[in-house]
Image 1 (cartoon, rainbow, N blue to C red):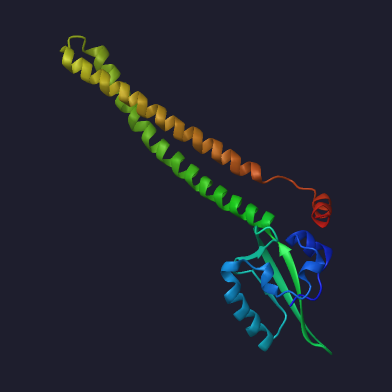
Image 2: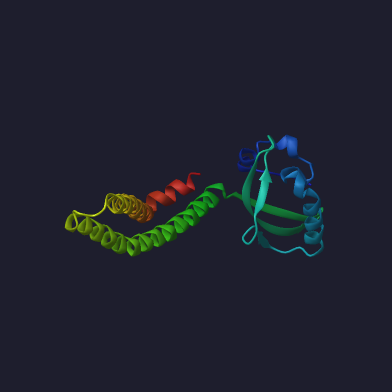
Length: 199
């Protein structure tokens, strides 16, 4: 049961201390995992130890309004005259999870941009050759039967269309490559540290 909490916990979970005093810990856990959490809690008290939670799995806290947010939790066990007590340090990792998701997305886009660039370069040359040969045929053989000329013009138009698609792929690869590079920039560490400390 919850015996104490600081103001940061009030901010994180949206409760006043008086509302949580004496409540089971599971009130801060999403309903769908409360049963499993009770089992983990019992196991922990049978074999208490200092440990971190959430580093290799996804833990979620539940606010008073029912909303959820990702957390990491460090547990410390102390023995008192009143029995065993656990000190839990709860960290809201919403921002970090978001940045990790963005980084993964950027990696996927970078890979897609590289793939698109390679495909575009491979297609560019043969399309250019096909179109130039068709234009030469149209220019060098003015006496082509109308049906043959129309067919060559259709092929040439579609070759031009393919070329535009290839150029779009190249543009995409350049844009995404530029976007990925823009993520990395010099950072003033003292300012960043001060900003993080004020959170």
